[in-house]
Length: 231
Image (cartoon, rainbow, N blue to C red; front, side, top):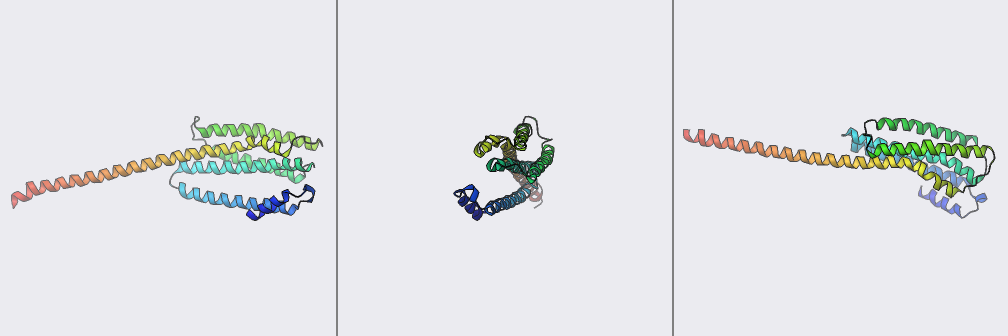
């Protein structure tokens, strides 16, 4: 991934018409592989750490789903970004990519909502979910559709790539707010579990001391009141 990034950075100084497309393709492939490996590592670590608590497991799933939906929404955005840069019509595979991305996000959203069924309405997670729904489904998708219509009608885009990225970041980054809210909730849950575990430890230790004390008293009573008089 690092080598692919260096090659891609070198291509920035080359005029667009002379850039090696294989470098771009290799960069995309390398970054996708890196993200996939990171996600697998993250999922494995989360699964190991959360096996004993179903609530932490739920938060982990929320984080994973929201991260993946942000990634997929970025791929949907990249189709329009490519059309802005090239000035060409979106190819059929680009249209299919948009439709596939939307189907994947719709499915992921369904799973995400299932994970939030037991969350109270007042918690930050619910607020983040509502905002992500507004930003992506109510704002981003209609915006993509308008950009597609302009492209189909051969109307040149007047927005630059930089402005397009800046304009759409809030829409798709809203998924990351779910991740942040779930992360915070998980940290608070872990802190409570640690506190409860320490309290239980102290309680158990106190119980052991109490039992030891009662045993000592019983031993003392037996020795002083029973054994000694018989001696």
